[in-house]
Each structure stands twice: as structure tokens, then as C-alpha cells.
Image (cartoon, rainbow, N blue to C red):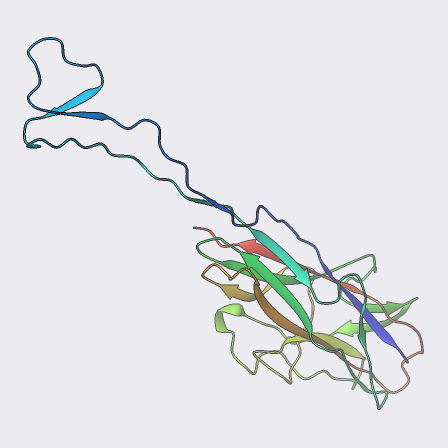
Length: 224
């Protein structure tokens, strides 16, 4: 039996390549050594009687680093395939989701079910179904041990896990975004990768077929 689910990066906004420019301000004020004359002062000039033979001018500097927000997955447009050696426990190879941002307060990465299935959270083969697991995730308490073990006692189940936090339990996909990563600083140019693994546990008697679904990853800049 082959089970598949497609993971698609839904957001890919590249606002620039971070190129810095250093223009000079053309509105520097002229400074003249000596007291201001009673009459005939030069328009726009500043007089300073304390410079002792020196004159000065100031120039403002400006350096612009272009904003960048991008997201990509390791699999490009290929489906992420869940495979098994025993016909009961299925798992994918880890899917890397890389986010790059120059936002000073970093970004959030979220995941949700999408696609055309009537029940978006299920993997479907015609009318045959593998339901989402019951495990949940709270980024505010992002520690190992969240999620739940997939069960095939009543229904076949599938889910995902964030590998850096938990190598065993799975989270059930939802139709609303769930934040799975939150970084509070800008990334390097190579971005930050979050590895996500998809898994399923199949009950005895599950109908043969190619089961498919879809998830969407979204990267959002944190508010400043």
C-alpha cells in the first residue's frame, strides 16, 4: 500500500536580496568661521566664532538593507511519500521547510490542511479515509512530549511532528494555521530550516489505494 500527502509552500515572497546602498545627503549646511555679520549674512550658512580658523560641515548617511521574506521546501513540487516495511506504521523522510527573513523581530512558521478533499484534514482515496490524529501542539509551550501516539484501534490515523521537538508523537493537522516555529531575530541569508516528518498508523482492514492530501506552510513576519 502506498500512502502519499503533498506538502506545498504557499508563500514565497522575496522583497529583495539585502543589497546595501550608502548615498550621501546633498543638503549639508555651510559653516563659516567668525561672527555673523550685522548685515549681508550668507543665506543658509551657519556662523561660528569659536572655530579658531577651522570650518566644519556635516553630512548625513543612510544605509538601506532590503527586506526579505521567503519560504521553500526541500521537496519542490514532488509529493512527500509515506512508506512502510510492515504495512501498519508509515513515515516520510523529514521535510525541510526553510524560511529567510530580514525582519528585525523574526518570523512565525505555520501549517494547516488545504487541498480539495471534502474532509481537508484526512488523507483520501476515493471515499476511503485516513483521519487526522488527535495530538495537538502549542508553540508557547514548545517542548518535547507534545502530540500523541497515532492509533489504529478504531480508525487509521496520520499526523506530523516537528523533529527538533519530538521524535515520537504526532500532531493532528487542522484546517486553521498552527504555529510550529517562532524565531524572534532575523535569519542568515541561508535561512532557518524546520524539519517536519509525516506519519500514519493503519488499521487492519484499511482498503488499498493511493491516499492523498495537502498541507500549506506559511511564513509571517513578526510584528515590530
